Length: 251
Image 1 (tube, rainbow, N blue to C red):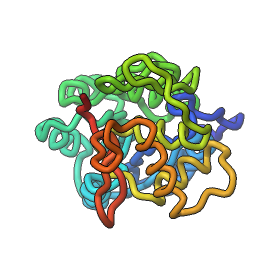
Image 2: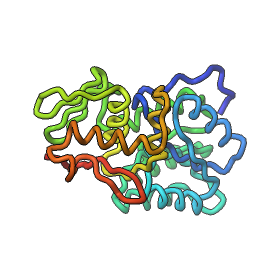
Image 3: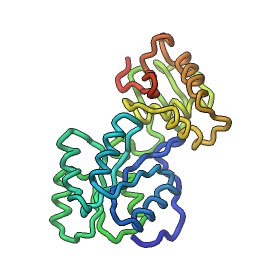
Image 4: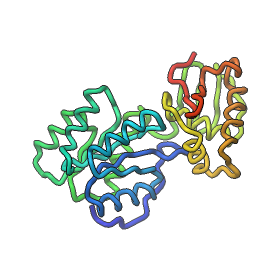
C-alpha cells in the first residue's frame, strides 16, 4: 500500500453512522496506515494481528453492534486467512469479506472467491481502491445502490434522503435528532446496539448536547410516534443492561 496522497472523503453509506470494519493484518505499519485512512473516511476500525484475536473480536461482535465488513490478510502468524473465511461461510455468516494478499498466484484469488470472499485485492494497493471496494461489498450486502435507498420494515418506511418516517404511508413527525437515532438503529436491524454506540453514531451526525441517558428519553419519544402501543414496543426493543435492538421483522 502506498502512502495516501489525499485525505479520504466521508463514507456515503450511512449518514450519521460510522461503518465498522475488522482489519485482520499482522503487518503493523500497513495496519496503521489502513486504519488511519479508513478512519479518516468515516469508518470505525478494529485491528487484529492474528486469527485468534480476530475470532475473539467476531465473537464479541455477536453481542454488540457487530461489524459491517472484514478486511482479511491471507498470511497470518497463526494460520491462513482463508480458514477464517471458510468458517464464516460454513456457519452461514454473510459478513462481507475483502481479502488482501501479497501472494500473486491467481489460484489464491480463485480459491478465496470460491470460499466466499466478496472481493480480492493484491498487495501493494492504492488506499482509494481499497476504500472503493470496501464500500461496494457493503452496499451489495445491504442491497443498497446508495445511501438514499428507502428502508422498509413492514408498515414502517424510512427515507434517509427526505428524512421522513412513515407508517402506512402516513408521515410521522420526528425531530432531526430522533430521525438520526432511528436511522442508526434501522441501519443495523437485529443487532444489539449499546447506548455508547448510539451516542457515538448520533454525535457523528453533528447533534449537539448528546448525553448517555438522553438516548433513553429519545427512544421513548420515537416509540410514542412509531409504535402502535409504546408500552409494548415491537419495533425498537430494549435488552436490559445491553442496549436496543431494531426488530428485523415488523408488522
